[in-house]
Length: 595
Image 1 (tube, rainbow, N blue to C red):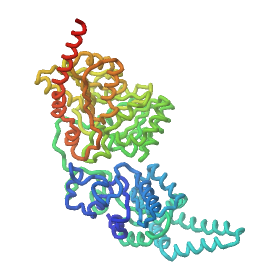
Image 2 (image 1 turned 45 degrees about the horizontal axis):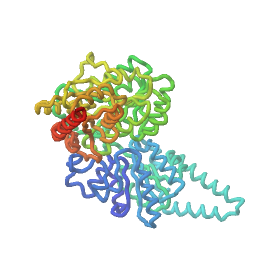
Image 3 (image 1 turned 90 degrees about the vertical axis):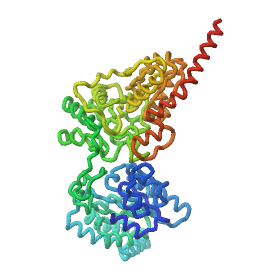
Image 4 (image 1 turned 45 degrees about the vertical axis):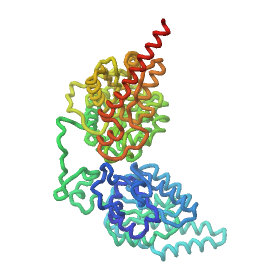
């Protein structure tokens, strides 16, 4: 909060530019830039977005949802500003978690050579400072940011430049060494930034508003790349969050007086998919010491945080470094271990080259567990997992499975643990599944679909969350007199081609259903199979249309994408009479030719 106030006091963001990393830390900024009145609509359909968005406010200069992008984007703005010979300031605000991402260091390194004027606020709430060192560091920071020191520094370097050539390099090196030695003694983090070509100021208490105001005022007009290192505390000012910052990170609704979380209405005997994954992985790790799991800063979200105390050497959090997680897993696979990569679908997008280059080409058995597949609700389009079936299906050697429920997830994980013939992905949604009877997980046969209903008129091929929807659609069609088959595909790659050909050759319409972009996903694979096998049957692809679906509840998002049972049933029924006429005409034409 104090960092936000200090920035708004020192800069005019109607002309200056600011880029917030991820966006979680930008809520005070949103409130103070004319969005306070309807802030209770945060994350709701038509309400304030949970992340920065250029189409929400002119004060949001760059959209964000994934980590480590702020410095790169801000540098691009600084380059553009200079090309247009403008004078506005550019600021990036990045947290210590996002600073672990390689993209942040790529941008730091780049501007170390470009020397563009920009300011990075490094909001560090991941460490504590020794009080004595902190006091000396504070004194040094005030001195290093003073106009006297900076003027003296420039004059000293100019003096060195005027020395005889034989003495110039030695004199400048000596002055720089004295400067570096002093800063590294009092402020060790400074050396990392200064070796990359950035002027470093810190550390400063990120909750001390007068100090922040003073420091930013002193450095904002300095030339070149500047870093201010602010130490903050998660949940500062709210006792419950200060005591357990992890618990109050990304919170659901809670009572502010006692800090107790408001329980959601019971959904019956259910369990989250993430918990199913975590529980089953625990079983596999206990049974097989070769099983190792890696995650990119998502221990809790993926359901494996409880496993780390028991298996500290086999449950690895690599930080916000998705590419590293994938390539490290590839290396693990070469040693005979069985790596699982626990990751949100939306974040695996960042590691596509690593999947192709480091895993698939070498046919290494890395097991990708894709949580939050499909619509995710309030986090909106930056976090939907709607593209994994498409970008994974195109990769040779890749196997893709999609469980209908928790029981199938357990069965697929069992298969995955013993699969050694290349990479494999299992994608599953955010949300709950029926409480499990651990003794009744189905036996998953590789590449085989599961026929739930037989029918002669319509065949509904569905994967994952859309299987239950297909059952509901089938009920509607049956009530209208259309015999309807429902097939739980289970596998997107390889597809069960025998079942597709079998139904494609006899029904009046074949429909594919998926909670993935309609382009290149499961439905595309079904159509490709029909084409390759020479099966001519009317088809309908049901999936997410070619547009970004806004925030809201998952139910609202499926409605917006026309994926509700009612909407799908209507589309099929609109097509069926036409389809029947075409089939009858084709039969008549064939009879005439035969005659």
